[in-house]
Image (cartoon, helix red, strand yellow):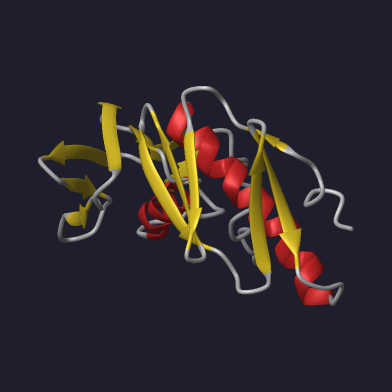
Length: 181
């Protein structure tokens, strides 16, 4: 059995989980999330604990077993605590501002970069060079953070660009001056 998949998941008191028609619905104080289960994966709820089961012992079944248990745990954590990703913008004149449901960024291009914030995600800019992405869906937050970072990933020579807080960018040495003869 999968070491992760066979562990029981304790369901907090303020979380309600429903399993029907191959869908798992997790509802908590911060919101509601749903996910479709794979055909060969089933979920049982007994005495405030959740158990993920698989149909067989094939390699695919084993990998899906642990995956769906981890996804359900992420859903439970999301509806109780929520998730946060932080980005920092480095570069002269690089900045970001929130206008309604759009993120407007000046990244050194000839035009401003506008990004429409998806529903269910909240983006804050406490400083012009700092972005905080909040929400209950871990997968969606990671996707939004990567899309924003992709507009100007950190470059290795000067370190300019958008990076995750704490991300280390290995700097390269620039061109060396040629010695004349």
